[in-house]
Structures are given as structure tokens and as C-alpha cells.
Image (tube, rainbow, N blue to C red; front, side, top):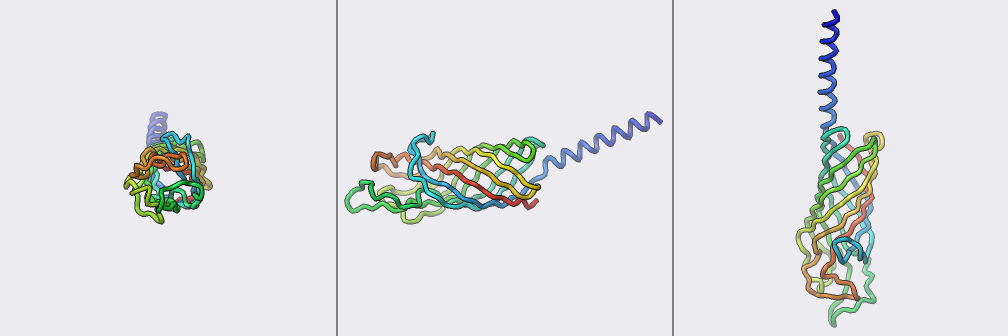
Length: 206
């Protein structure tokens, strides 16, 4: 009788562990929308940041749980970036040229390595950006590079397993423009990289 009880307990433990592991690997589809602070920095470390403005972002992500503590997350996020405020009245430009808003639009594909602490999550990882269009770009800056890449990090919180709020900081490592024009009002736009801060609100579908 004791052996039978031990055997049943052992089988129950295996089944519980299997069910728990299965639950840990469950994927989550999440729609997000939020506000962005966008701009440029003139070095890869983002220490010389300038020309910030505000925009929005919207997209969908998928999170795959490796365990209770760790997960991988990626997706597609439409993100208007650059400086969208047209605040360049004091910048010296060549005769016949004009400075307008630096409106560049991307589809961003992050790959987040996430650590979970109860309802909180901390994430970091690489991000790839695909340039999809521009508006009123200043001709002196030249063409936009088709691919952007960099590093992002952030943290967030999940509410009732359905709603989330997240803060993401992104620093681009690739030059935004193909220009060779060197100095505009002491800022080297030939080395400009994307810099973005995003506050996202999410809804988890599954």
C-alpha cells in the first residue's frame, strides 16, 4: 500500500512538472501603442543628443517563455522617428538649401531578452530598423540609409495578465543619412544616429 502511494505521488509530480513546463513555454501575442520621444545623437553612445521631438508608435509583438524567469520577445513596430518639430531657424545652411523636418519612418524589429520578476519585466537586446519612407527631408542631408540597427533596454509591468506598460530606450549604432556634409551649427549630422524613448501600453491577446 505504501509503495502504491509513493508510485502515485511520483507520477503526480512528473505530471505537475510537465504541465508547469508546458505553461512556462506558452507564447503571448501583444498589441502595443504609445508615445515616443525621438531625435538624433552625434555619437554611438548617445552622449551628444540633440533635436528631440515627439511622435507615436504602434505594433504587435510575440513573447516566448523559456521558463518562469526568462523569455524572448520580438515583433513589428511602426515608428516615425527623427526630429519632427522643424526647429532649425538658427542653423546655417548653404545658399539655396532649406532645413525642414527630419521625418523618417521605420518598421522596427526588436529582439528582447527578458527577465521576469513577478509582474515586472526587464529587457534588453538588439533592434533592427527598416526604413520605409520620409517626409520633407532636407536635401542637404542626402539619402537615408535603408537599415538602422542598435541596442534597446527597458522595463515594464503586466496587470492582471492582460494589460501592460513598458518603457524602452533605444540608441542607434548606424548612421541615419548617407550625407558627407560635415557641420551644421556645430552639430555633425553626418554622424547622426537615431535615439528613441518609448512609453508603450499593451494588450495581451493570448
